[in-house]
Picture 1 (cartoon, each protein chain N blue to C red):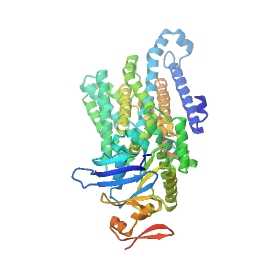
Picture 2 (cartoon, rainbow over the protein chains, first blue to last red):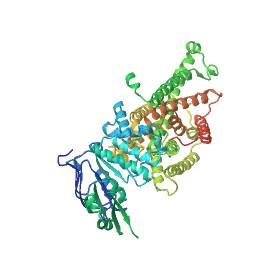
Picture 3 (tube, each protein chain N blue to C red):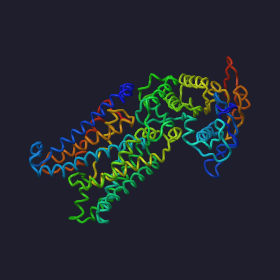
Picture 4 (cartoon, each protein chain N blue to C red):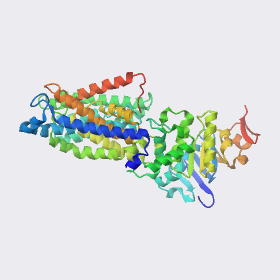
Length: 261
Length: 340
């Protein structure tokens, strides 16, 4: 952990997909603290996924600087990055009938060289990851046969087997029903309590309100507001983010976002 | 090894036992095949005949043995390549026959026979070049077709590319010298191993053995490469580079074997399918399983091809018949689903 508790720092990060396109990410400055859950919240097309892919290194940084754990993002090799940052993509597609355990074992790849096969220790770690995600009982089931929620948890387990300090999740609850979304968010809270830094994107303010310690509001690639959820979640901020009138109310101590016609 | 093996989950232990069993079956079949043939008598040559008859000895060592090895290699290469192509293209319904590789290789070989003098190395390199070109064309076309999902698009593109190549091969057949060149081309399209000699084997071994070793060593990585790029990248995998190495090994070894054996259809599709059923889809087990099972399958077909009738049955006809029949049989079963 870095001494000042900042896991990720973005300074004036900009990105456009093609020359001449508008900026998908526009001079974004933001900080993510270690051991917190940070939600990047915004409407569709606001640059959330782009930002996540920049953090992952999948997209090249064009402008600005990014710091991970106190070290310049550019100084990490791809392998080092994959040991530090795990990804749970929005729509993981597993074509072949790998069992859940075999699938989670793929998360050990960053710790193996090109010619190495997973060892019993790797298998142990994959099994631990399944337990952490609460799906140890599914270890032998083929991934394509899982329900949406189970598959999402399997993906979380696969990312956890990487032993990352930072976990990125792209719209982790968008395809899930209420019960499964709760399950995922519960696992994320437990991971945060265990010291992991979690960054998730979502277009659903209620999902962010339910789980995030910190929120970064994005609109058209720009940060509208950032900070602790209770400070950022105001009717004014959210209305500006989504471009429709939004009301934030507190129910039993929880923030709930309502949109009015 | 034994200490670790006790910690393995039951399915993994079962798969290991099955792999060893397959290996034993393959070795036993290779040994038995040495005694099978049409000389001195049909079907089976008794060991004492082989001991006492010097002509039978020479026949077994100089004709049967290289042919047995070639059959095993053809089976291993086609099945391993089929498995690799299926995983890399995330599509359980493709093999080198479906992706324009085989059709491209036979077009290249026909071209070399008709236009380039037909020397062994020109035939092989032409086969490899047009095989790779066929694969690239199928892939690029598959990305541009606006119909169906990825599985269907790639298969459709492969069919179209293969058909184009086939029509090109037909033109070459039409142009070919009916006495000198046409028999060579016809051999290609039917597929068979009757002309295989030790020098042929020595020509293909430098390509096929390293390719098979590369595929075997990198087999677990195939699981990673069957994931989307986003996931593979997040796992630190240089997906483009690794896919290229594996595809090159798969296509080069296929083209090398096809340049000697002609078109041997359906092996690359059906064998990995059965291997996944028996051993699970994890390529760490399915790939060696495909190799061994492919060796057994093609060798058994070739034994039938050279022993059953007094004349030779083209091997490609047999593998296609058995493969397609098997494919239909599992498709028509009630619990059928494409084993991925």
